[in-house]
Amino acid sequence: MSDFDDAIGDMTQELLTEAGSSCVYHRGATSTTIVMRKSAQQPMLIDNGDGIIVELRPVDFICLTLTFPYAEPVRGDQITLSGSTYEVQAMNSEKCYRIISDQMLRIHSKKVN
Image (tube, rainbow, N blue to C red; front, side, top):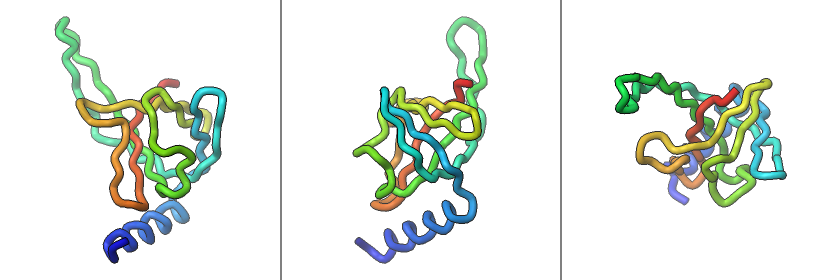
C-alpha cells in the first residue's frame, strides 16, 4: 500500500472516530452493525419526461473498506441510522458505491423512510 493510501486510511479512521455513527447494514435477512459517516450531497433535479421535476437528495455513507461486511455494496441493500432507512442505489450512471482507496469506501443511497 502506498503512503497516500495509508494517509487516507488514517484520515478515514479519525473521521469515523470523531464523527462516525453506529449504523446497521442490511442485506436480505442478515444485518451487521458498522461505524459509518453519513454525508448529504447536493440535491439533484430530475426531469421524468412528463413535465414533472423531481428533487432527489442523495446521501452517501463513508466507511473503512476493511470493516465492511461484504465484498461490495449491492443495490437494494439498506442502511439504518437513528430510525431512518436508506436504500443503497446508484446515482446517475455510476455504481452504487465508489472505492476511494484500498481503505475507504463511499456508498451511495437515498432515504426511503
